Length: 237
Image (cartoon, rainbow, N blue to C red; front, top):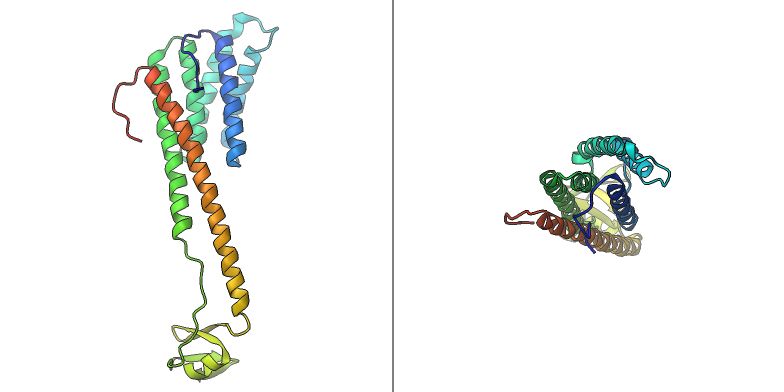
């Protein structure tokens, strides 16, 4: 099922039902991604949802539909701007809500505009995740280097100066002439640390791949919505 199963809905109540349905999907995505949203830029988004929830109350008088829908639209537009650089993924979700309101009020071109903006923001969010994955994959975990017996670099041990031959015997790593880490007794601990660090990085990479796929799926849904609204230009993701 896509973001919207139909584009034939009209009016505040129909918009409210779809906005709240999209909000459920956004919340589930946040939980899957373990994504934390800053409360300050999110405040207008939450205010917009409150206007929508009022529209959705059974006892709500329909004469106020247009006002609450207009207020919700302004709130979501503010949220889009707040999130634009700080959190592109949440900016994309705000754009989807704006597209729904545009469809409900008969402004199809406006709905297409917001869907396109949402696609752009979701693509930015995906690129951020890709960069994070590359950074984790490329990030080296420091490894100890044992001194060659042939080294004659000078190091400091216990406040005195000695050569690489003595340092090697004492179990000291020489890097640029400075004794850094005693490795004789700590070598086993270093191997265990390295395995733990590698495992942690592997887990982070797996998490990053899952995040990438989650956002990529969201982008696919935006592409389909954009096509349904009449976007005929070439798509390059």
